[in-house]
Length: 258
Image (cartoon, one colour):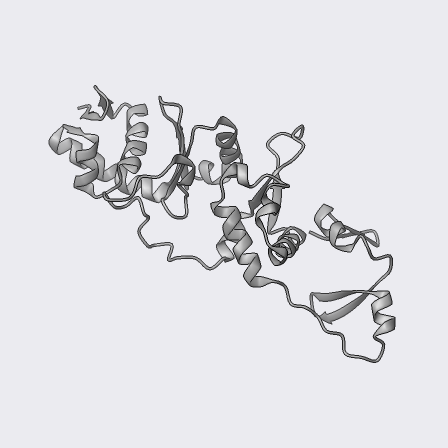
């Protein structure tokens, strides 16, 4: 994001990349809060003519944001991610970086390259499905996915065995975790889960009520009865085990602790 300090304009790397080939530029006010920055040579050459201004690549920006939001960690590494983009999407990525909507995240400053991330406030502005619509995991017949393919937006949770990705998720969502909007846990199998708070509370209550009545059930039987995916039930059972509310005597056999 461009900053102004003591009559100086301070650019980040992405903004500098956009402007590095221009020595002098004209700053032209457009309307309140909006300015045009035009190459001075272009202004002199086109003096007296109407200047045509290209609009931002909005559609391509949405495409890039979606790719980053749903992409796997190893696909979002700086230098790797750009290879997946066409020319317009590459320009859109520069626009997003310059505006601060997309940034490079490094868990450790010693890492040479970061991974692309979308700021949470940007995600909220993106066209999306009804936030109150059921998640894919709210269906017993939900198709089982590979762990990296689960997302908060679609499934209501993320899951990973990769310790580095788990740390990144914890740091990126720190405020939401502290505010109990998201809940995180690492299972005995070494899988780190981060689950939507409302989804967690909703199905936690259903599972406890069912176990209070039946006392001892198979995990799949619980999932079928409350119409939730096996993976979502497995996650919530992990929290209940940690809280001492249920016991898993054998794999998949859940008992309620009276």
